[in-house]
Figure 1 (cartoon, rainbow, N blue to C red):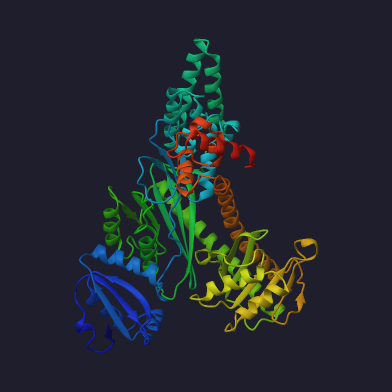
Figure 2 (cartoon, rainbow, N blue to C red):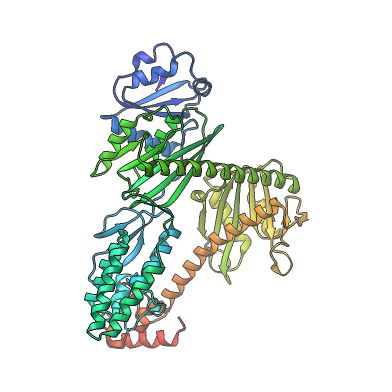
Length: 603
């Protein structure tokens, strides 16, 4: 680490690498990359720098560099450090999720599912889809048309009769041989063509097969093809705009003072399939640097992020034909793929121009909407401070909720909100243990202790409950200097009549249409949703295993073998005594005990 003085630049190397600017407390303010560290850092000490860069340099007391072996390695390291450290002056777009794909397996009877994460299984991947809702909708449509199974292999292997998917006409039940392997494979091939956009070819092929079946008097088969043709003609996977063939991402940026909005238009097989919006408040003033940082964070290091061959950029300045570090970024992207990736900022193709205009228009609308929502939330927070007489306007809020079933499987949840809305990556759940069943007060105390043992306090803590829960929380939070309130259900637990308890234990009923009350309701409901989801999962798992645990002679090993072999408690219940006796360590006598016990239980 080097202190900033007249000799600092002389000590810097000319190698590629990353540099870090630190303040007087050695806190990292900014991380940057460079092909030549000495030249890049020297550029910050020029005269006539812009106002925001000058403001940054006024806080810089130290500089630290890391030399890398290549330019690309410097780019990747910068990207990693920004995501890890979140420096104050860097542009950081808070999204690093993997996008959903449809995955078609390579089984004898292939399985069609939604997949996230690394693509390391044998099979075909289609996508990505802009969100889980779009992927689910597409999956349901494809099931209706082609009848491809979605069940796990253990479930598939041990079916004796069709499941509910067959009953609702979303599967052709290959598990019980209701469809031949040949016809199932034909449906799989049609599915592949459909996902590649070859709709006309599929309909033509099916029409020909229908006519051939009718000539052979195979009317049942002809009716099956006729149904598929009708479905394909009426139902299409949602596609909003049709263009030329190919995949591309179109990136547009909109800036309103320090607020940045970036929109990515997703083009797949020549069709606009969705968009993603990202927002940030920037302390620096370089549009090119914003776009460069976004491309780096969006594509590099994300294991499941699809990189198209063409990335179109709507550059704010029409005079520019390149963005900052464009060649550098292209080189790094090409190293991540097996094909050539091109970043395009100037084009004469009509479809490309159309997409760029569309992306720019949508980026402007997205930022305007974001700022309006943010302003509305800020007003709600200000109103909340006034109506509840809080010590200050809450910039950070955390809400606790307890969920259990007559004291069983108690779960505590903590959801987090700030001035931008929910911060889902900071949500937490706690398995509450070693308390008296149904003791919500003890559950609240345990959750608070565990949450703030290492985590810093927010401005406002909300407890889902009444006076008692609030008092227990206040007693537990001895060193907390912020505000604690609770929100209790009103008479007959009717929404809109909730009672708010503050530190003075004075009950308040806010107007049910006030923005502050609606915000409290939203936060409380989110905490409840987050808690009850895990509670139900835990309860179902416990009940499934408890049925087997109550059978004498079934230990953890045999229980595990049963569940692994049959895939679930319902499949075990459907099995015969002979089928149960196949499991190692289970003889016919024990198999009969299992059979009798499961058939006297309600599962």
